[in-house]
Image 1 (cartoon, rainbow, N blue to C red):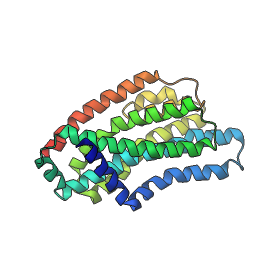
Image 2 (cartoon, rainbow, N blue to C red):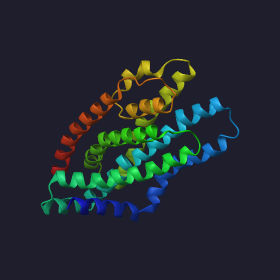
Image 3 (cartoon, rainbow, N blue to C red):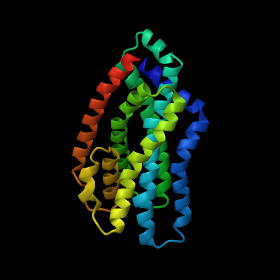
Image 4 (cartoon, rainbow, N blue to C red):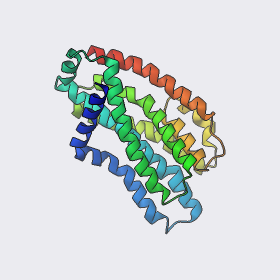
Length: 249
């Protein structure tokens, strides 16, 4: 049953290529712009732009698409069409549906993440260890964010409401990290000194790990194993809430 749920979700995601292309295109557009920027910028400026901004934004957009846009809208649509209630009447346990859909989400994320990082590897040097570390941290961030799709889908009336509400949520998570780090760096301050104010944002742990992996910083704010523990605990807490929301639909 878990395999069937994962397959159904992946097929539904492919069946709506317009939404997928619209959400994934911005991340890959940053990669395309990077090819042209390399020939007109100094090496130092180029490294800061690509490693500090373009690559993190591209990865964050892909994670948000699969953890928020795709999964939440999919669930909100099922809720509006009463499909979710029908699924519950079949006797499928909440954790079964949660795991099955999660496998589909994680499979699609890793597919596009590998494609994105492979593309960027032609522009900047990305070692195999850095490549694997980025994928690992991205999966832990998705693990923490994935339960939110069930919680948010329970709050939104239908997929149109979900689509309009997800944009400001995405911008809050993304730019609270990106803009803070960029402006502090330009002001010649260490962004890590202010990370304590952003511990609520799972993207903080991905962004900080990415900066170290790309040699923009010497060490992470906290040990990376602590990042994984924090994200795993957050995922368990949100998954408990998501189960209650799913069961109440």
